[in-house]
Amino acid sequence: MKTKFLLPVLAIIFAVGMSFTTVNASLDTEAWIDLGDGTPFEINTIPCEGTGNDCQVIVQSLANPGPYTLYKDIELQDPYDANTPTPYTITD
Image (cartoon, rainbow, N blue to C red; front, side):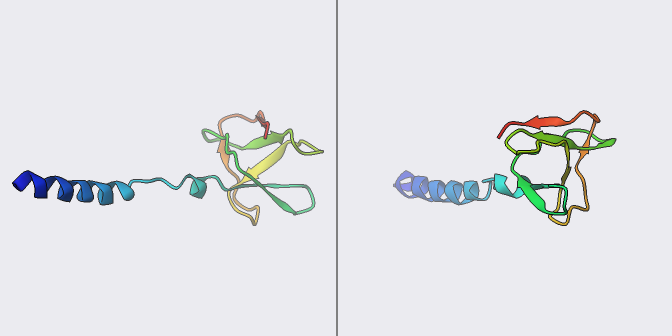
């Protein structure tokens, strides 16, 4: 009798608990480049790792692939860091 009551209650508790562990990946994918005239262009890939240099990317899908500095904000003020001055290539 206790298990008929206890198992559904535990299932509900675990379901509610697991709903808070879902990660929203879209929050971490905001990156911007300056197309040259101050116009921000959003990039969905952030390949940069490390520190010491501004992150540079080459975007192969653009008419002028770059390299461009990758920024964290749409105002193009805060660049991502990278451990190499060599630009990362983005193929999408």
